[in-house]
Image (cartoon, rainbow, N blue to C red; front, side, top):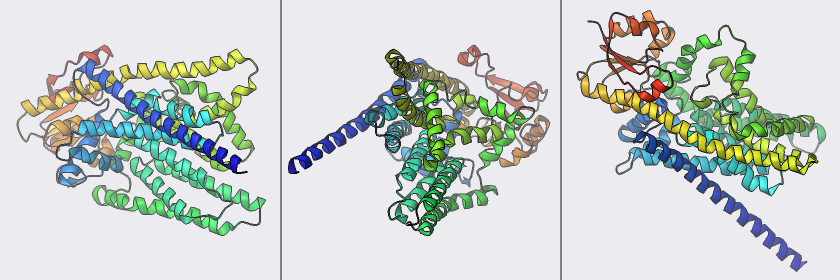
Length: 518
């Protein structure tokens, strides 16, 4: 008996060591991948940058928070223009004395990508006993998926959202309802769900799905056994919901005080700006279209495993495992209803990719033994690995190109207006991120993120023009294709254009600076 116990201890120690080796490898892989993307972009563009103008919006908020201790876009004017206050808070230490915000932002991306891979492995542990899937396949599929690496290097909140989403689901599956339920675990889960929603508002949908899964699991056990305290377990789920509300309350109050609405200005502005995309098209067509971008890559070959696992959980009524899978359905449906856009490689849909990866690889691992032909099993597995690597390399080009466009359009224009326009002149700007970061001219926001009064007529060009003139704007900055009529208006004279070759190669027009009046 003593010998058997020692052997068991050695096996457990060996498994624990292997697990930590896989975690370390995951973080190293994440660091190398993100560094590779940043270096490729620097080599092609000759300077550091972000692939989205929105990343510069986050940096403006973070700079004001880090240097002025205020949550604002314009210094001295508190604003609810950010959908991700938690990301702003995490970025703000990048503006401490002696800190380079670029290094800090990249470091956050690396840590969150590695942590997301690690959490993917922890989640997989609740779904399968296959050590290879848990320790290697699930973590590395997430950490090396090209959308995830792109997001980690983007300066955006995407990886923070992904990590918290995976952590919330993992904690919900860790609950053992057959034992004494501890409220502490549900409080912790509520905090995670609240932080998830503070990262992006749609996090409340996943929080709700997790809560529903817990309720269904309790009801199922109540029917199967009379020996559990159902009331206590339902009360625990209630505590989870209450804690979510407590975490969100300060942010909702801040939005209400600064913008007059519970949700940030961005939520309403984006919906109004792209409302025309929901008219005259089928919801189901828009819904299906939302999967196009996030399924580009190795995850495409994991879909059979995902569908198989979904059928298994549905047949077994494993609600706690099934409800998080509904996130893969619910998030695209939400955007198809409200904001059916695919731009920037489907960045709004990226949070479903790790769930496709984890549940898909678990399902594939269960399907492979059912395939009698060994060559077919190997071909499927090798194809997944090959696509992962091919798109990881290809994604670096996508990242470099996107960063190059932002640098030679938005950043270049902001530096030009700073140097060439009269001090204090009011600008009306559509993409305010880099403009607000590099130029201190006062601005009106044509997209409504920090100028919410424009939202009711955000796509009505005559009213936009009247609004700009009424508020005293002397210059406007926008892409001619976005405001086709304003770009040709006789009262707006173009005084500068970037001439960016990268944008031209893609068949798009360059960003222009216009003078209002004559």
